[in-house]
Length: 365
Image (cartoon, rainbow, N blue to C red; front, side):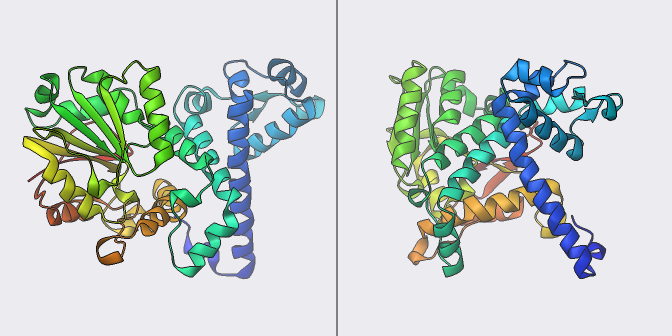
């Protein structure tokens, strides 16, 4: 969180804004490095100069030089030797572990894809924002949905969803293993849906989303994974999610409830669709209940995501009696359990699963 003492003079404020511009533009260059292979070329290579980087990546030496200078200024690269005798750059192993070998590089690339899509319709977005209305998926450029899918894939640690399901109260995983039904609400391109289908091969799995193009992409992904015969994807809003004979043993919302204009209505529909003994699994960004406890770098990122992407989407959907009631991306456990109780899911427990960026709740009537 910014120290308010740094905002006590016009010069200090101007300096902070210049710093913000530098950070914003540098984030773009991080994504450029992911796509062009510069980070991968530097990982474990020791000191490299611009010409060597050009040979390894195909990036022009002068462009590689300026890119490296940006990363040195940001602290991600280090200069090796005397720069007056020729610039050579080293990627610390700790940075490589995050940007090359970990999920963060993918998250940055995904965020850039979403930002680029927003940029294509930025005039329309700001006009809608200023007019007090939402900005729906149909109004965004085509790349936005692809960026959201990239972000979901990068954010889901291997085995995380399966571990969350198996950490639910006894009976949920067993029901799926015995052929029970599972519904993924707000499935997008279907990455979480297909992950769970692979983990529980006996389960009958359904994904639904209001966005037609996402369902087309999800069906294609299912076919490519050889799961089209067992996994169905349907175009449907969360409040009109499809039913199945006997009900669902599990309904999941993976980072989707806060995108909805009527979250209570969506959860109420899920409750109606549950089989006896069934549960709702809610995966949301981990947040504290109080604003002041979210004023940190992670909270700042998610509040920005909420402002630019999630909440405008929810507002555009409307809600009960025509008025949207979105949660915001950082809702916190108190707000989530409160809206669940409004939907008739009065029993809530946090699922004990390792997820530093996610809060996982199991909801039952």
